[in-house]
Structure formats: structure tokens, C-alpha cells
Amino acid sequence: MPANAFNNFNDYGIGIGLRVPHYRHILEKKPVVDWFEIISENFMVDGGRPLQVLDQILEQYRVVQHGVAMYLGSADRLSRDHLKKVKRLVKRTNTPWLSDHLCWGSVDGRYTHDLLPMPYTFAAAKTTAANIREASDYLEVPICVENVSSYAEFHASEMTEWEFLSEVVERANCGILLDVNNIYVSSQNHNFDPYDYLNNVPHYRVGQIHIAGHSKFEKYILDTHDHPVLDPVWKLYAHAIKLVGRTATLLEWDDRIPTFAEVHREALKANQFVEDQFQTAAA
Amino acid sequence: MASAVFRPLTARDRMQPRWSDGRSARTVANEFIKPNDRLSSFERLEIYNRVYWFRVLDCLYDDYPGLRAIVGEKKFLRLATAYLAKYPSVSFTLRNLGQRLEQFLREEPSWTAPNEILALDMARFEWAQVVAFDNAEKPRLTMDEISNTPPGRLRIGLQPYLSLLELNYAVDRFLLAIKKREADTLRDEASNTFESMPHLQRRKRPVRRPKQEQVRLVVHRYDNLLYYKRLEPEAFAILRALQQGKSVEKACAAALANSKRRDVDWVSQIQEWFHDWSALGWFCSRAR
Image (cartoon, rainbow over all chains, first blue to last red; front, side, top):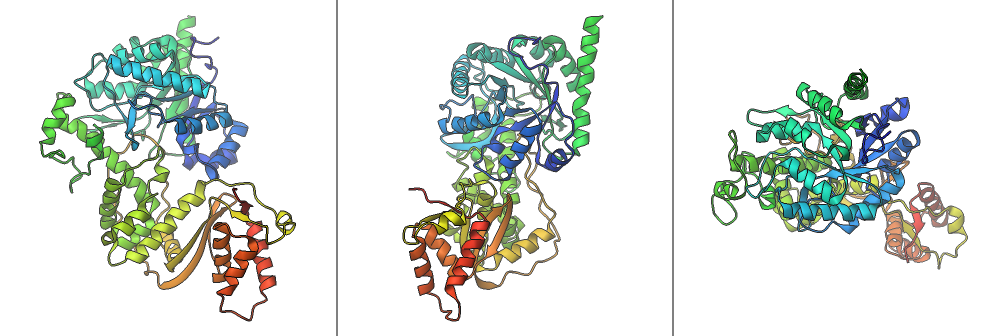
């Protein structure tokens, strides 16, 4: 049974991000992995090795698309050209849902290649929700929006981040990709309680969870995806699972990438938290 | 916020203290970014400014090892900063970041002086490799399809991933030597995770500068691996004419008209070339 109305794929278990240094290992050894998440933009090309590798992966594994450049929070209208490329990839992967970030990153046709934070205003929520609805209608696949890690807050904000996320997803009627590492990073950078965040988002909309490592600097935490998951994030993950039920979970590891076996081992730690939760619930 | 993100960093990799209109950047940042108990508004905005530049410079640093070797590491970063300040990314993918580098180097040759022509050759060669990596492949034309059409009516297209380069320096061999010297580096996956400038490589074994010579090169892929191949002048001229839309008959005639070589059985030679090029998958139907 799905854990919630936006989580019809709770049998997906624990996935890992498909990354270039692991291609050879995966294609040659064919390790058992519940599913792979791909960065959509890395495969929105016209030919060559990226698509060849993707097709080989698709023969063996379930793949879910995760975007970094749809910029759902942009004040500009979504790029129809970009959506066409995403849709072409959706047809190739048959992704059961896709995700992108609650952020903006381009203005006047110039791209920052970053996931920039938004002012948490009702006007921004309305615009973002309209963008999500447009993308979902065009792509004909459910969308989950992911909370980003951030290092700045705006004077213009009218609500907390979790209130903003809730406002957007309710207006757009879409799912949430809950990144518990991002919640932790932002909570440290902005002095809020990450459990307040977790407790106050609409749990019935959470379709996927991200976990990752981060780096602590003297005055802030940076979302670096270059470490194992840290204990406070695992604790948040355990709490999230308690709130939202069994949910497709993915480990992101994007820099200083270790062996495939090490990344997979780290990802599978998540199973322990899921099983603990279910045993507690059964008892 | 975007204006702040795109502004080049200072020589010490910090956000510029003055805004574009001369106001204090601290004052401007205070107007829209909240401070917290550890960071001022300026410092919080600066994180995004620095991450942007670290990311895009790191990308060009990885994509242009040959150009880097020619101009030097520090000068390369200054050149790349000037290029991206003039031509910021207009594509959703970092893959296209070097798309207008050739144009920039033609417009502002002082960045590569005194090696302007060599640097331009290398930039064109390195961009051609980006194109060869993942540009489209159209359905291939077979030798049977080619043989069954009269040469006067036969118009052959070249694959979109294929680039023809007429160069003044042997940059192909130079880049091979550079790549052999440097450990292979893969560009990181898309993520918002940059924390430092590209690490400048120190004390590297010197590689002899390429010599000046006319090189005609095709940059392509085969079985999804990158290759570059030197071509004889006549072969290059035929392929270039085909790329420009000439019929096979006119392409061959034009190429041979300018040839100085007289002791060649051109019929056999051209047949052999076409056979090889077809086997490599370079031919496709021409778009009408």
C-alpha cells in the first residue's frame, strides 16, 4: 500500500545517484540496486556516450529523473524548449515521477547554474505553483519539488521556508522531494529547529527523500555532497520516515566520489532506519 | 541577487566591495538580504557570488587543458573570467559554457598574446571535442545508397558531431602530450557544491610547444569514443565542400582542381576515402 496519495512508489526502496565514475562498475558488475536517480540535464543531449550508457542502465534498472535547471521558482515563464527536452527524456526513461528544485537560477536568459533561494512570499508561491502545474501538465508525469539548502534569507519573506513549501505544493497539487540534509543545512544556517520543518510540511505529499553529506565551516554549513551522511541527518531521516512512512530514498554523493561499493553501503544504512520504524510500529 | 552573483570576484576571490553604481555593496546587500548572528548580509550574498565563479571557472578549467597549457594557469583563469563576464552562460547546461570562447578570443586577442593563433587553434580544437562527445548522430548513409545515386545528384551530409578544422599548429599532438601529463579529471556532476577555485597545478613537467604547420583535422566519434584524424588536403577539401552542400561530383572536382599532386590515381584514392568515411559513419542524408 502506498504510504500516502503522492507516494505510489514506496516499493522503490533505497536508490543512489548515477555518477560517471561508477559507469564502468555498474555496466560490468551489474550490482543489485533498487533504483538509480539521474540528473536529467546530463542526459538532455542529442547523442553520444551519455545516452548509450543511459540505455544500457535502463535495460537493467529502474531510473528516476531529477532535474537541476527547470527553475520552477523563476519569475520568468518556464522555457518551453527546456520542457521539450525534459519530455523527450521522460519518454526514454519512463520515469514514474520526476523532481526538481524549489528555487530559481536564471534571469533574462542568463544561467547561474545554481539553486538560488527564493523570497518566501505569497506572490512567489503563486507564480511557482503555476509553473509547477504547467510543467506537470506538459510533461504528463507527477512532479515532486525539492527544498534546497540555502545560505541567505530575504527581508521580503512573509513566512517560514516550510510554510512556503506547503503553500506551493498545496497550490500546485504536487508532491515533495524532502531533502533532510538540506533541511539540516538550512536549519544551521538560519537558526531554526529542523524538527519544526519536518513536523509542519504536508506529510501526505512526500514522494521521495534525499539524504547526503555536508561540510561544516566556521560560520556556516555548505551542502557539499562529498561526505557520508552525518548523524544529525540520519536522526532527521528517522523522524521523517516516522512521519511519512516507507518512502523512496536516495543518497546523493557528487564530489570526492568514492567507490560504488562505498556509496551503496552508505545508502543502504537507510534501510536500518526504515526497518526500525516498522518494527516499532508493529510492536 | 543575480547581478551580485554574476559580478566577477576580486583578485582575492571575494565579492567586490562596490556595487556597479558605485554604492557600497554592503549597503546594497543589507537592503534585501537578512544578516544572522554569524554572517552579515554581504557575507551571505558573497557565498553565492563565489560559488557561481568557482563552478563556472572549474568547468572551463576542465574543458580546456590545452588552452590552459598555452597561456599558463593563472592567465587562463583571468581570461576565463573576462570571457564569462562578457559572455555569461545562456544555456541550461555547463556543457555549452565554451560555446563562444572562439568568438571571444578573436575579439580580444590580447588575452592570449603572444600566442594568439596557437591559442585560437587550441580553443577551436577543444570545443570540437565537446561537439563530438554528444552532438546528434543522424541515420548513416551506406555505401550502397551512395553508389546507387548518380554523383551529379548525390548530396551527402556530414554528421552533426563531426568538425573539420584547418589549423596552423599541431595542436592535436600537443594536447595528447598534455593529457598524458595530467591525470584524467572528470567534471563533477551537476550539484550546488563548490567551495573553492580550481586548484592550480604547480611544477608540471614541461611539454614542448607545438610547431607551426598546416594541419587539417577531423574531430569525430566512433562507437561513442572521441577521435581526431589528420586528413590530406584533397580529402579535407572534399569533406568541407560536402559539408557546404555541394554535390559529390562538384566537391571532388573542386578539391582536385587545387591539388598539386599529379602522380595519384585519384579515382581509386577517392573511392578508398569514401569507403573509409562511410565505414566510420560520417555520412548522413543532407537536410533539405
